[in-house]
Image 1 (cartoon, rainbow, N blue to C red):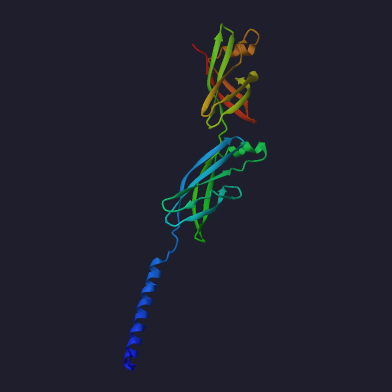
Image 2 (cartoon, helix red, strand yellow; image 1 turned 45 degrees about the vertical axis):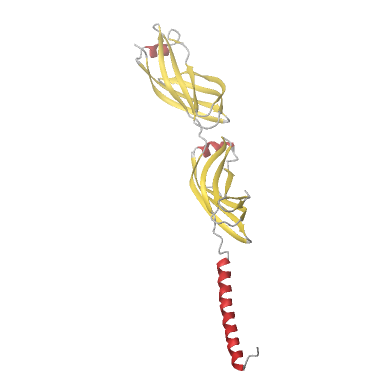
Length: 285
């Protein structure tokens, strides 16, 4: 069929209209099929724990978890962190747990940081006397999502409990009278280990003063390990003191109550734990 001039004009118009319709339809298809921005995963806090505790150091473990929010795959590259401890320089580092995020997947991110300990043993006792150190921890994670870098962060704050140096206390005291002139004073010393690790006790040195007079001083060998969250008690005494040999003891025998002062040290894991106690003792009727 041969088209006339008018037919060519109509055909050209229809062809152009068809091209416009097809062009619009194609644009809509491409827009609908586009991937859109990658939805960042959530970095969720999962807790803190304390490892390798001792009087010479400890580790703090921060636990987080990356939770996928997008069906597409993303590769975990690295997780830098910063730990700020009150009074100390920030501690920075990076962990590389690795892994792939996808639909319904999670990746555990665990960061272990050693708490800076004083190098001078003489300063450790003062350091532990703080009992706890306030902290702020920031965890950052970087992922590769189809060639684009994605970063997410989370934080935690609180206080890190330090190991506790035990205390030595007088938990009991009594006086005994033998006949008309002999006496003996007995003391029970208590030692409580509140830590999650055992401690070694070596010896106790002491001095017992009664009514201003030194009645006994000495050393008690111990050499034992006290289990975690446990306690021990130790007995010391003046021994039997005779008034027949000392007018001062005879004077004490005649008193209904006696004022005492017990001082000493317990040697433990390189530390000296002091005891300094005062009180009164009554003779039994």
